[in-house]
Figure 1 (cartoon, rainbow, N blue to C red):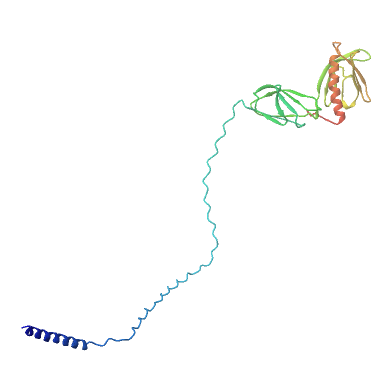
Figure 2 (figure 1 turned 45 degrees about the vertical axis):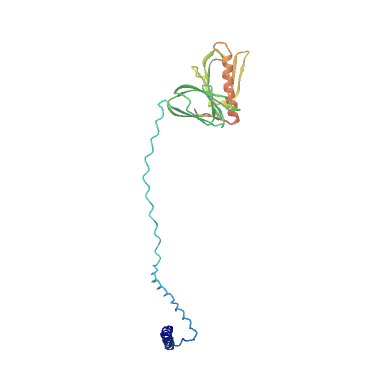
Length: 258
């Protein structure tokens, strides 16, 4: 029995083996060539972008000035408030710079000076400068501006005194009047009246004991005056004021025009 099984199995193996060899003999021989490396893909260069079309160059135009903006109209200035109705603006000057100015004994400043610290009405003005007689004047001020000029370098004189002129026979009464322009004797006796510039006085002095004022005109007559009340004080004050002005005129100072 074992032979009966083994024999068919043996036949089957033989058939399978022979079929295998047959199939192997029919396959194509395998090529032994070295495989050729694939060629790299060609690099495609980017296509250059087309050049931009040339821009036409315009001829330079004359530079145009830009129109300036029109400024807006300025608003009208505000009206200044009206000054008080009683405001006084007092300006005081002097021909001697730096003269000291006082109004009603209150120091205002050195000339030229302006003040509004005064009220309308009557006031006393005093101004002083070294080397000159003090200036004093009563002034009446009204609202508004007022300018005053104090002239120390001008010779001012306004003096008078009642006198009796003694002459050879009798006497006559009259008034001696002195200004910067001269000395005048006013009297009803026309033969005794005279007018003479101060510079033409040869003698002009007071004898206090005799209570007499002596006036001698250059190249002319001599006059002796006394006071009607028999007092020499008025004669002395008159002679002092006139002689002071006379000396200034002799030095070259100019007489005041008013």
